Length: 396
Length: 227
Ligand SMILES: Nc1ncnc2c1ncn2[C@@H]1O[C@H](COP(=O)(O)OP(=O)(O)O)[C@@H](O)[C@H]1O
Ligand SMILES: [Mg+2]
Image 1 (tube, each protein chain N blue to C red):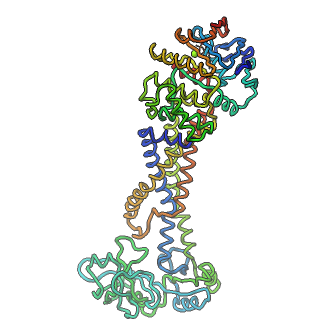
Image 2 (cartoon, protein in one colour; image 1 turned 180 degrees about the horizontal axis):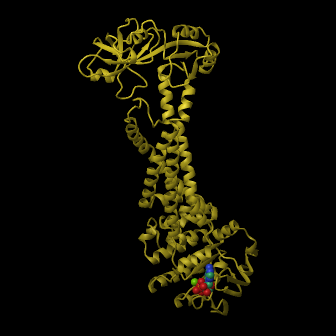
Image 3 (cartoon, chains in turn red, blue; image 1 turned 90 degrees about the vertical axis):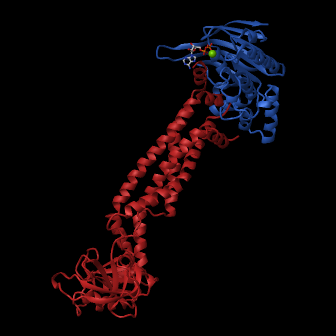
């Protein structure tokens, strides 16, 4: 009967105490696991959304977030120059415009994304066809819009540009070619995509050659950094960011709140887990001082009784930690749904994202917790004076 | 006959806030194979302390304890553990069986610790439970046993690794007279089977069976009577 088996029997033959410990660790472990998923969830999810669009470098006119700053002038020439670089595989001009549906009394605000119909789209078609080869009047619309306006492929739709000073541009007629998912759509956004030229025409700017953004796909053998460097060399006046840059920028700013919260909560959570197990073990050790002193008296070494306690701690924390995984996963799905229902959050952006790394860290942190929780009861047992304890337990 | 254990003028002083308490004063004693020693005396006279020192769970403040001619004072903690495991059996007033183990598992524990192979362990455990008359209760946990039964399991556990010396501290203190009688008979039997026995007791029935009777007072042996 090695220390491991003795610890095992101690755990399984005190089911009430063990259940209490395991459930406590499971609750704490579930929270801990969720905090690990949260700490990098946004970054992973954001990265995934960026990758989904299929472009890894973005070119804008200035150092602001896309669509907030000035536009790129002579966009076609710029796109051609970039496309000619050996590190670049594809370039796509993007121009966004504010529009509204002109039909009925209710004016619905719509985001119009103009892009080159011949290039690979940044959206994913889920019904019908893409706009490629269908001329300037073809549109793809997002699901939300299709559902609320009951539109389907083949429907016609009329849009008016909201053009600030150039108010009063006539409505344009479009035909819905298909329904698509846009990576950064929020749950309630109304987004449509059509030809680049249509985005200009919405505000009557038919001759203007501007773009809000160029999206660039690097050649796989060159990579995003090399492509970005080549673009910077070719045109010093534009601002070039890779997907990595964007992720890091968000990581430093917006997402860091979630990371800090998750670190604080994980630490507090872990502390309570350690406390719970330490208390359970300490109480059980103190209840059995006579037996422990007897074990020492009949010849078990100090190391042997100490390792029994460490094993016991490891079993309680281990079982709780495993139970924490399904519990934490369920909890994270629920919490994720709550957070994603915040307005302005892209519908496909997740706050809690699983990665194998989280499992490894979860296991490591719990292993440390098991050792920390055992530390105090181990000290009691290691320092236990055998004779004095036997005497005290006999007279008490 | 060479003694199993020999105490040479040992003293044990406990430093206490209100001043040192001397539990043993200059005690010399030798226990040989085949001995059956009873220790009696008023409460607080140092009987348990003597047993603890003889059993190598406590160290004397001064004097020498020789176990098989080895100075116990010079042994490291693990060596003393080993000595207790293989040479000494302990029986206590309060039994101190592990509550989450069955009777058989309690008896098996010291054998496993000593590295006995599983099959041999099982055989010896059953033989020992048979010896103390509890083979039928092998799979019972201590909470399911009576006081006398628990003490018999504790004796079986003390005998697990065939010790030369069995130390019992008021083994019948928690038991009624009839049950105490059973334990006394069991001690007799294992003495007859070759184990040296030292038993601290207030129970005249047990004291009466010992071959040597040690009277203690105030930490001293005041009288040693062969019987
Ligand atoms: N660990 C200890 N700390 C302080 N005093 C002790 C300790 N162990 C024993 N004593 C004291 O030593 C004396 C003898 O105790 P003990 O050997 O238990 O007596 P007995 O077993 O004969 O009743 C008592 O006065 C007791 O208070
Ligand atoms: Mg005593």
